[in-house]
Length: 440
Image (cartoon, rainbow, N blue to C red; front, side):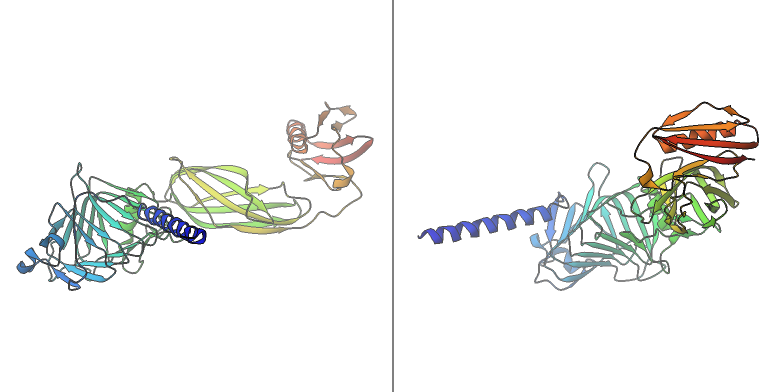
């Protein structure tokens, strides 16, 4: 064999090895179901009816037997199947290879078409590989079962009859393998059993309780969805709540802003229709872009309220250079869960130069004062000395390079001073500027 042939062979072996590793990684998204797996053979009819006695030794299942209560049914040949049954009990289902399976019932009745799962100590298993779909079309009981949906897999829960649309989740753990691992609820009444429910990999939040007692679905749309025209929305919201995605404690009536040119401040105001377990709000601001948010205030919530509550604050620390100020509210409940309001914005005008290096505002003031640079190039990082002068008496000088801390200290001094006219003297390097301030 030539050297070139050896290289080609080695390259082929490497490619096959890498492909096999990739396939192993993909198939490892969901763990392997353990138990007696019975595969429906690819040569079989596309419709399976366990209610037919002739199917109890159905040759289309490997081992020749329809899966029973200790067995896991597997469909893996890429076709679409409908399996109808009247109270069939199985331990689990595996769908792979872009297969599609609909679980239905051949006739009407109030009993479940399928009972899927095991016991608390020997749980069942439903695995939906990428590209495959499981469709539950009739009353189904899911009891003590681990459900795993790979990214690209889907479970549809959508009854063909609104009187046969109960779906029980009892001791169910759901693992979604990515944002494209989907569970879609259609015509469904969802019942949560005493053994509870767990969900991991969910991309959304809980629902929102509205002022009229109705519920709003999570927004933006996550990877577990409900049809607002068909699903029992309250049941769906309780389903998310049972899995730890609680109903959001605040419904906003409005959130708005208004720029006060005289104060050069933005007034933010919002109102809640109802509050449940609401600890506090954190107001966040971003300038000219919504990629860098900073907390500017914290407002305590009322906790619980069935009537509208109004909130407001002024943002006076605006950039002198102007721009667009974006605002949003982070609401945090007593359990630490949080949610965000919509984002609103205000355009802030630039402060034109007055020949001074510094700007002191607002003026007149009730005590809070802001000191800002108008001419950046005139300040080169020197120590800043500030004095507050009234009736010829000099207050203690403040020396710092931190403009924010100087503003805070001057505000503290003004707040403890009586009303009147003051002179604020700012010196840095060889420069001095003075401002007359009216304290209300």
